[in-house]
Length: 199
Image 1 (cartoon, rainbow, N blue to C red):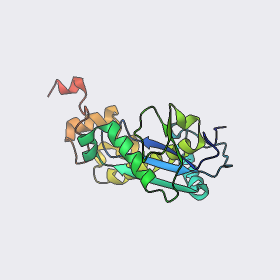
Image 2 (image 1 turned 180 degrees about the horizontal axis):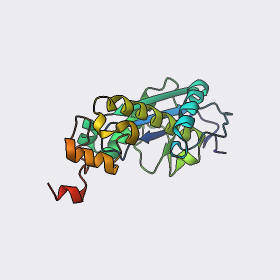
Image 3 (image 1 turned 60 degrees about the vertical axis):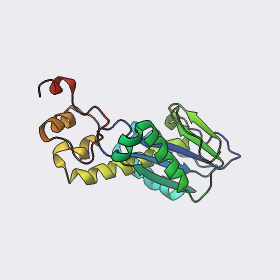
Image 4 (image 1 turned 45 degrees about the vertical axis):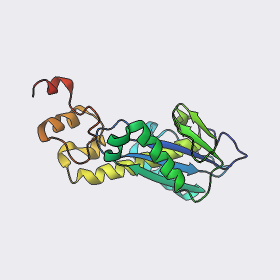
């Protein structure tokens, strides 16, 4: 069972991102504030859950959370400021959108920039340790997946409904065959080295 929070005395939000390693699409982030006595044995790191479980848990999180928010930073901004800064920006944006002001922030990972002088704690693999970070990971992942499934209809040859923009062999081969789209991150290495040499 994951811990509810790091500091039970404070109003605490957990935040996490999704899509950081993708070749296309935005990076997303979510912030979640859970009730202090909230428990749920199935909530975990979104990567450990099936799509069906993520979607079912998303409904529970959105119903039970005291407050939550999801934010996106698009591929153009990612190319401008790099993916680390874009991920932190997405986290800041979703915390900005909370209507319940947090007194402490739990962050998945080891990098973050202080937000409005609110104390924060970075936790490596925090989405497998704290419920509020795990809940944020589920929201960030499900909202981003839905976005990628939507833009798949515009560019079905890249199969984003399946790979969600990650650099699978199929996705990279499609880039070779069809070129790049307005959703691709130009600051990322899009072409496989072995194929790039054949051009």
